[in-house]
Amino acid sequence: MEMVEHSAGPMRILELHGRLDAHTVAPVQAWLERATAGPEAQILVNLADVAFIDSTALGTLVQGLKRCRQGGGDLRLCCLQRPVRMIFELTRLDRAFTILTDEELAV
Amino acid sequence: MGDPETIRLDMPASYGYLDAVSSLIAALLESVEGLRDPAMLSYNMQLAVHEACTNIVRHAYGGCSDGRVRITLILSRQARRLTVELIDTGRPFDPSAVAAVDLSQPHEHGYGLFLMHSLLDQVTYDPQPGRNRWLLVKDLR
Image (tube, rainbow over all chains, first blue to last red; front, side, top):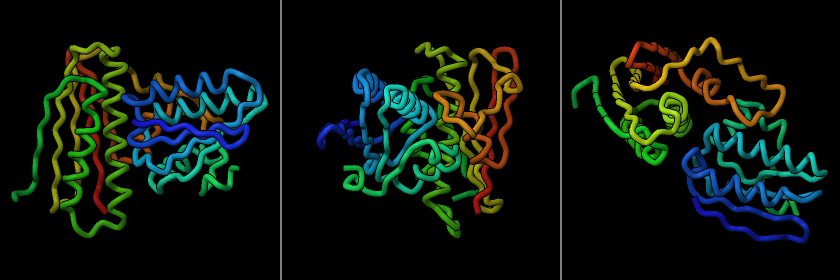
């Protein structure tokens, strides 16, 4: 799992590359914990290059979402591949997260 | 190739090997013709087995590095069915004691069993002293 971070104004964008699962999620969780430590954190997680996501990763993203919103910010997702999108729909997490088709739409 | 086709693995119960199991499932399913949506079927099967393996690593063995899991994958092209058996020798659990996940709210835990039941046609768990067995079945349509 490779993580690439950049910013667009106040928004921090995290691009993930590879498999996001119980084996690889720890550094993502750590990054989200740091990024959501302050108030009004605005985060976008770009999943364009994530072909596999499991329930552990879903839980980590939900944790980040909750931390953001508790601080008055938000964590959004973009560029989900079709199977990953399907898992979000199956778990109804597509209703909890704002999911964009394009990173540009978030900026 | 005979039918059914059987592949057996005996591996450490470690998160690090689960991508190899996914790759094996993907390779097996690539050889099946006439699937409505091959990419989704493959992903769903990989994820369901991955969730079962994750449960074994995390709960049956409590993350200990010396547990093992025996996995048998049986692909029947004639019956159009993929069956996956997973056997561990760790701590059993009681599936009926696991509360169903409430999908009306986002949760940080609890989606694993839900995904297994949603993505597969049959999920059976048989805990026995010293030997717990998952049987996962997917009809290949």
